[in-house]
Image (tube, rainbow, N blue to C red; front, side, top):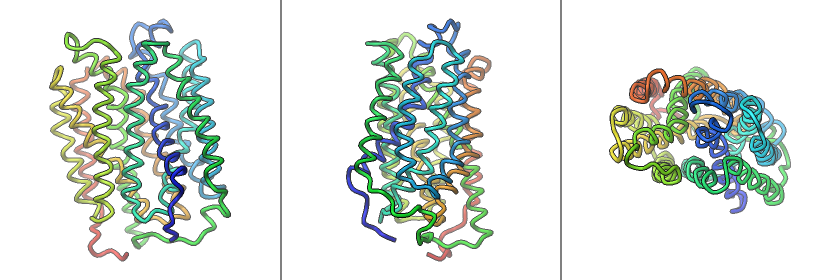
Length: 393
């Protein structure tokens, strides 16, 4: 494998792209209260299901995105990603009612589906330390989550919710132009290159690993989507009488996400040197008591509990991508990642559709306890990963 890494500009843009990908998917959740009021809804819970199309396409679109990444070229697909997600987010800023918003957000999700099966394999295909590269990339992605909470809050306060979509949209288009200039043209599509996986598995063992990856990614994505889409409203509810300014609440949420994101770098570095299963299992098990605590905490106690929850939810994110790099040949990584993402994110997109009705019917307390159950299910699935001590490398 060629270990001469991409240029600094290309690596920077690939990491920025991950941040934008997650940011754009969460602007709606961060602004839903204001948008619901303007569109004539009595509560944000009633408007929230209109955003589900973005997450459905974010998952299902991963299959064609991954296929095109391997067979057509990852550089080309990343240019389509930057420009497409920018223009569709700009369209979202121009919508006038809930159904127009739903359609525009669905386009955002379709272009957002490109990043994970294409951008991450492109980032690691030349990396000598893929775990660390994925960890830093995960940090960038979750800083995008933090930025969505903070930037949206400030733009709503200063200009309006439409600016919260339009400003990052223009940034994405500019990044696409820069990427087209900075990233060298591929001489051949990834599927036509010589390659190989870092660890060799029998077909039966590979099928088992792929099944574990898919199921654990699905349960983990449900946790990620429920929390990142619901934390803003949870804090608004539990901080009543303590903090009420939406911009300040956005800063507090951004602090949680920024601190939690650092965990991905540490996890990525560990995974370059140690086996996946024990680290993955420990991180998932630690989610359970913190989710239970979050179900009952109020005010600053909730802030502390959510910080712990998000440290270990974000800390679990690098594992699936590291397993793909470790066990899957680079010539087919985008397609494998695309299929896995389509299944897991397709299932977890239900979390976004159910969030508003679930909170309205059950309340955040019950919802957090249900998420603790999802964390327990993830831990059970991780136990089925094979031990790496006897695997051929």
